[in-house]
Image (cartoon, rainbow, N blue to C red):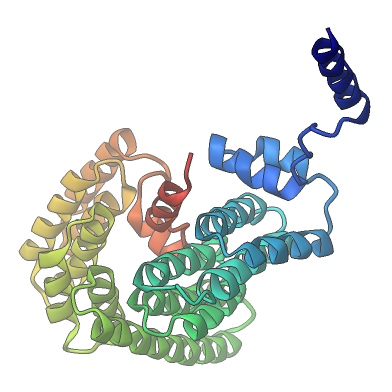
Length: 352
């Protein structure tokens, strides 16, 4: 009888003191764990509602002190996902979360004594995706800031040099819009055009340098080959065609191949090889039938070749086949885009 009474007393004591009740999980840990489990941010956003910059920085410092690589990676991808969601409406908010993720990657993951080659791959992909968050908003200023910090952390990452080139190339392409905006007199327009052209050429030169560094670091990097060929073509350099042909021959990723076909068709047409250009555009159209760019490029080629009826026929067909914006690598090239490939790879690293 006595043992039973003692057992009952122990149970009552346990219930009254709550000594064995599990401690509540810190909100930040709960948010990251929710993201790991669901892949979404709904629960995480609720858990961290009202948090300040200081709250986040304190939580990130706590995670870094654990040295848990899985947790560091998951938290870094979590902040990247938040940045993706915030960027269209709040670029400053997105940058805050990019900087928090940078601390986890640069000071936490790469700062650990055990950091190795795999951590470098993770860092390169994380930073390339982070820079693309702002490229997707055509925000070259913030994107450049991310890339510059990234290259200080991982200067030998070829892919980061490609992103650096893309920032400069997009800045050069934006000059076209600046020229078209001004309608106040031909002298002023000519001056603006000259200044814009000089700025664009300077940016293209920086892009070329970045792409060349990328192919030096990784000669097999197709994206670097294709983008280098395009920049050289825009600068009217004779090497352009060789680089585009090399990139096209090696391109396995659909986006890389479509862009290589479009860029090389431009070079062929510019060299007076219209039939070759048509063949390349036909292949691009077959590879990406929902994209507008191959259809419109083919129509333009026919128009310039003196075949307006054929051009109109292609445009009519495109209106019923191609999507208005979606699935078009050319639009992403001209306006910037989120690096979906890197983001998908990073998401796959988060344990569900």
